[in-house]
Image (cartoon, rainbow, N blue to C red):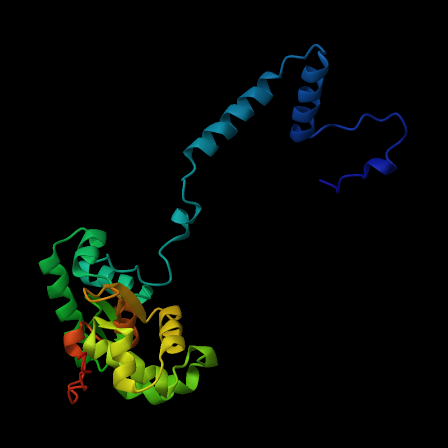
Amino acid sequence: MGAPVPESELPEGTDVPLTQGERDIDRVIGVLLGEPQEAEPQEDREQATEDGEQEASAPDNPSADLGPASSEPEPAPTVESVLEAILFATDEPLTDGKLASIVETTVKQVRTSIENLNARYTAENHAFRIEQIAGGYQMLTLNTYNPWLKKMLRVRSDSKLSPAAMETLAIIAYKQPIIRADIEAIRGVAVGDGLRNLMYKGLVKITGRAEILGRPMLYGTTRKFLEVFGLNTLKDLPKVEELKNPDRG
């Protein structure tokens, strides 16, 4: 069979046969214009029926007939693997109750799975562990790798705490709930700006009012404080010498 002759080279007046797609379009236009339609030839109807049956019998997944995949199939999710994925993705600690709700298992199973994961991380010499932080669980890198992480991280200057702010924060952490006057009595300087800065950074919050004259506000640390300093509870604070208690006379 020779190559088709371009329409532009056909003699004038020659009828150019329509393709099936062009016939379909022509028929639709005719219906829209209200023109009478010719009956579709039996041969065309039979061919269309065969084409429709072939399309209907085609598999939903086009890759089903491509043979086995070149890579091995992914293993089925387990409680441990799901927990691992969640803790890897989250940027905040999650309680065992929250994890159990997400994974749809028991709190006991969550704790057992975390123990198993940590045992595997240790055996395989991984650089991270699942730690208890701020009443929840979070995946953290080991302290051994801090020197390299510090090189990678670029901490904004406004996120750093000055020595004075760190001292104020330490007093609040160990003495909370504590009023501003007691903080200033221990430090020997005014701490108004420092307190506002610590509250702005989310490390300190107002926890109530003291039952003394004037009912001054009480300050304490936040959940973010525990997260930033890698503590599970305030009981995990390092033991230091007892800070001086101011005399209230």
